[in-house]
Image (cartoon, rainbow over all chains, first blue to last red; front, side, top):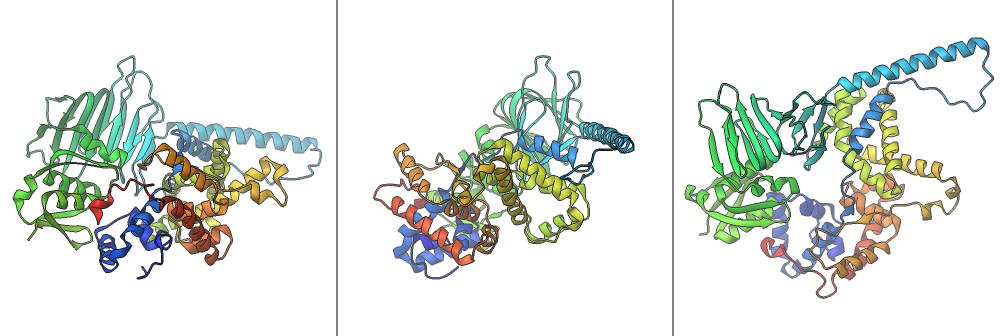
Length: 339
Length: 192
């Protein structure tokens, strides 16, 4: 970062500034806030530069839903087939050559058939990248929004008489299609929780310590290992299943939009405690948030932010509650009453 | 992805690890698709190009050189392949004016911005006045997150030229944005 920027353009062209606008962290936010304190007359230009960076939104933002899978299937089918050099002038094949060519064609076809067969029996594993959630379409038309770092495994085809089972690691929101034969849809997590579904929207957040299921609409039944009785969830309900089976299962009514806001890259909190917000920043973004006074955790507020920007969220929390947010290390935040 | 993780992933791919190959594909498919689409505006051509790119990558994995930025490596290869595919499809474009008719001309999306339709139209018009190269340089900088030297390498120009392309384009847009009342400034009150 340079100290002097002659104009909004100079700011908007600067890699350090772009990095801050696109990926704010407590550290770089502090750097730019300090810069603004030193240059109080430049705040209009800073705002303008921010708009220049954020307005550059290409459309379409995402490729068509099936493009990634279709192209991958073609790559898999082709990548190991032998390469023939392209010849400009091909001599007329002799009889022996023709037999040879025929054998080559036959073996290439066999190889292709084998590859396609092999490929069709392999399960599909889809991962979200490190930067943003990713939408995956399942063979039955259901969709899964995978949070950063999450993955889902499923077979390439489901026959009509088998359960639609997917295996989830991490956090995902499922929108499940309803099948005319009432075919079951099951989400299996590594800790032996099975979520059974009939056409519905819900989120499963599989974590080391606990798995959280939030139901937006429809009906979901939870089967837990070692628990004979399943839990029937109703829309608007949250259930936390601790990995340690001796701990209690927690059920409560929530605003489901709050828990699926990550799929649209927003922050939505309706009458939510600061403690719950801090937990979300901890689980999703790896923050460590410390409250100087533990009663602060129980304060409630409502906030809707159009961008999933932790720096703005923390600033808003501080502003609305008259608190001080201080940065201990980049990901370690301390929230205390204003002195 | 950190530089070492990326370096390691690329190493594993070069030694023939199918999982690494899959991970690279899944990580960069959307980036490559978007970039290709804004050059060619042709879904089928872009998908074919990505397919060719990855088939060739796999076949050549033993002979590939190391890289510390997989994204840059792939985008550069993608750019080459897309232009090649366009030229093959339309041989009439071959010739001196090819670079004027071919080029980076993306559609823009202003839905997330809190501006009126009339202002969106003004923005579109302002962006349409930028050159293909200006649009490409800004997109590589803002959307794909490449560095100035990487963009220069990709577009086969000097780093200084990239900086000028970006700066001149931003200057034009800034003139439009700084007209009184153009923006409804929303979140900044919270930030500053």
